[in-house]
Length: 283
Image 1 (tube, rainbow, N blue to C red):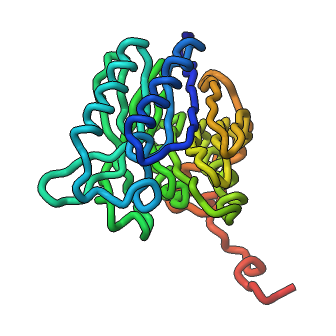
Image 2: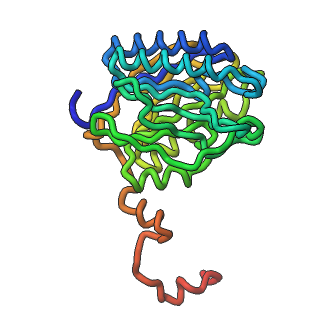
Image 3: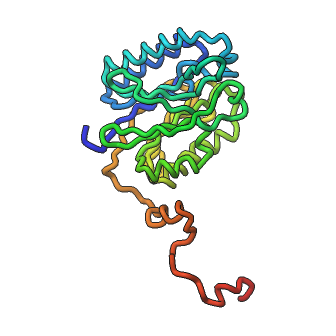
């Protein structure tokens, strides 16, 4: 693969509370993606565990040994096929502390290279999870990437530090599934992700679960905000798209983005002294 080009398989399926079934689906898609020459395979939030309060009652008396065995199977699969894997799961903490809602970053040697823990948990998630406190930034094929999870798309403040650190691609996992029908998420989630990509000149792999009813499918967005790949909601599938940081895209914010990020909220440093500018009631 040429430097600066990263092939990502964005995979969605009906995540459930059954760890064995989830693991089988994950390994199936890793094999399928590897055959198609993928570098990195991206899965939804809570891929292995299922989503608490929906797919499982919670983590009291949870079978952590079974989850660890499942994770080992995925790691072995990644090593066998030589691909990166971004895997949604839960990370057990000591004693009675609630686990993290996490993404494991598994490298082609099958090792957990890093782990991203969801920093903003929704109200319905707080009984189940402990929020994280760190970013995860890594480089594959010369492409600088970061991991984020679902609800965090609502916070533009999260993306600005990533942009300042040179992140070129956001790999963000979602679980908006098992709902009763269409909701506001049907209309706003993909456009919000497009806005985050375009405002920060980043590629984005947006991976959602497909359990019925899912208000939107996964999509892949280029740095000008255009969706270049999309999966149907409520249907298990994968798509492969290539990040190419050698390409140029329309970026009208380029000259003023840093200015705005440092609190300079106008496009000039020259002071205004004109009385007709100062008098805001005159014609």
